[in-house]
Amino acid sequence: MPVTKRANGHYQVTVCYGGRTYRKTSRHWSHADAKAYERKWLASVKDVAAGREPERLIAEALEKWLLDHVPRLRSATKTKAHCRALLPYIAGRKLSEVSQVWAEIKAAEMDKAPATVNHKARILRQITRMAWREWGWVERPAAITLLPEKARETFLTAAQVEALALACPNPLAGDYVRLAAYTGIRRGHLLRLTKHEVQNGFIRLDRSSKTSTLQMVPLHPKVLEIAKRLPLPITEDGVRSSWEAARSALGMESVRWHDLRHSCASWLVQAGVPLHTVAEILGHTSTAMTRRYAHLAPEHLADAMAKLA
Image (cartoon, rainbow, N blue to C red; front, side, top):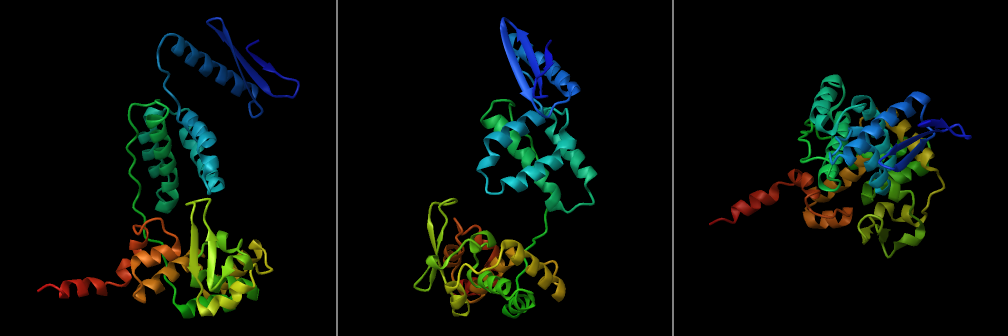
């Protein structure tokens, strides 16, 4: 039988064609799923034998991308969640239909934030580029234009940061809030730091997993003593719950933890620190990422124009 049920309860599809035998097993299949896969697989085998290139499904490209590329991403868990949200739209759809699928997604999710909808677009764009450039499944990548997103950066004042820190039910979470704002270090890195990374007024931030470099972050006097006590005896969940409580207490629910990093950058720029130095402190690989803060200190443009004869 082409479709059989193994002793472990998993269905196995066996396809024989051209003197060769092909087998595929999945623990996720029902009998109907296995029969559907058999029909699709047999059709693709016949296409290959006849010299015809089979037209691939979006789901096939997504599966290959998930296996080959996503495990290397730092945000693999979130990316997989976005992929699951995409599945209802791509069931049975071919790679040649990606642009049409994107149009359907936009129409169906008009009530959602553009940033949320764009997660699906970025995945579709990425897999079609891979299918074109690396796998040779399509002649050209799909043309997908992202929805315009509003800037989400919120720049806090030093007083607002201190208010958030004081509003944290756990004072140790408040110390992490201060440290995040006065170093610009991302939360994931921040919570992994120990006192051994604090040397001579700097935090030695190992970024080898991302850029193979050692980032030196100078410590502001306001957080020097906090840094010497790292790691603080509080869990990540404890930091998160205290942060949520502080935001709620102050009516600042729209403020994200990452805005502490944005605020650090804005303070540096407004203090007249050159953009390339800000980029070095924040660990940006290029000043292009730092230029989003340039509008906060336009004085250098006026100074440049004043130098004209």
